[in-house]
Image 1 (cartoon, rainbow, N blue to C red):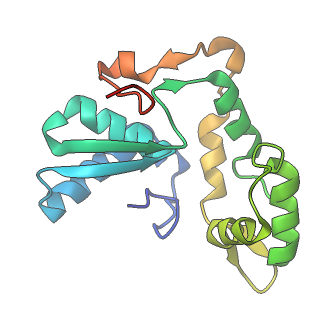
Image 2: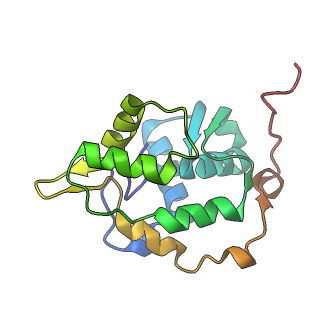
Image 3: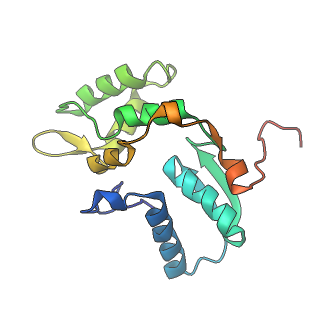
Amino acid sequence: MDYRGRGGSDWDPDWSHYSLSIEFDDLLTVLDELGVNSAIFIGLSRGGLHALTLASLQPELVKALVLNDIGPALDPRGLTTIKNYIGRLPLLRDLDEAVAHYKQVMGAKFPAIPDDQWRYYVSNSLNATPERLRLSYDPQLARTMEHFNPENAPARSLAAILRLEIADPGAAR
């Protein structure tokens, strides 16, 4: 499911609707409309926050949960990274420019990724228009982080907040 303002979903005319609580209500509406009583959820990034919340508030719906690009704790450094890039994109006219840009910005964190995977990532993260490449999400999402200050944001354990037991995939079974 693409949340409002992201991927294939419409952009909301009111940026303040890009909130976790409204998006969570959207998730519950979709699950209800589809008649989902229980499922295995894969949560990517912000979707992982929603999946963790769902597991906490309506555990009967969650058979299992897989998280990607999010963990059982929020680190202010990660949120600062997001705040520094969300909604920002220089003028990029083609995929080659975009691949070079993303490799420059993120390549140090992902040194083993080959060019064909960078191209795949970029082609799924940007939309082509006649003038340029644009973000595949609403740049107004950046406004949701305007007041985030890492100085006032301690690292928080989502597992503790949501009272969830999180299995360690590296633990002996």
